[in-house]
Length: 276
Image (cartoon, rainbow, N blue to C red; front, side, top):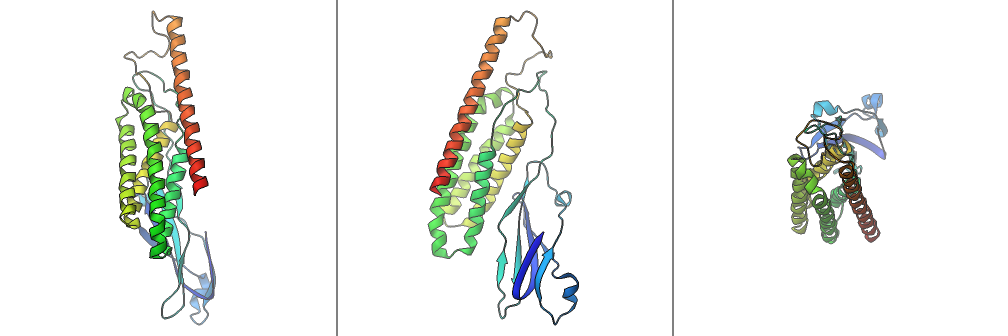
């Protein structure tokens, strides 16, 4: 749903779509409906409703669609152009919980939403640099690089804490996603420090996509800690109740560690927001 207006007249409008880190797609939007048939009457106001097929775009689980709208007026010799802020659509395909090596999934509560929201915020700030003067852009580069660095620290901290569980459950796919998120954020920092914000957008997009895929994996409880060799779901033959209690206590300690990590992350994000 796009609304635009100009005192003298609108000329064209377009929506710019970018699926994760793929090439941008630009689609023209019709202005004015029947009013456009009268060439002598400028279109001063337009309200457009349009849809986008995620299937036709080839969107898959864990990706995101970044989009913005651009509109220009009839000023001559050079038209004025304006654009909307950057919007995000997350693509999610529900995946039922799996079982690995005969053991049901543990209920791991790993919250990556704060990291995802921070990555989106930095992406939007990078996108907004285009409208600033070169001097104002230069003053923002160190700030955004610092924000990305702090985000990378938190990604690494959470990864370090849960890596033993990922290795025990043989989830090398999730380990690779964590590693790539950290590496691409480092690439984005290097581009900002070199004064190339446009080149910083791509690696940031890759990091965001990876965080979304990780969140979906954890949300669907696809981690199994210490897979057993057997296929039974209950207490194994000869296993004592004392051993069961020790296992339960270990699980509680793991959960407590994760909760402490979450509180620390929330504290970091709050402090960063105050600085911003």
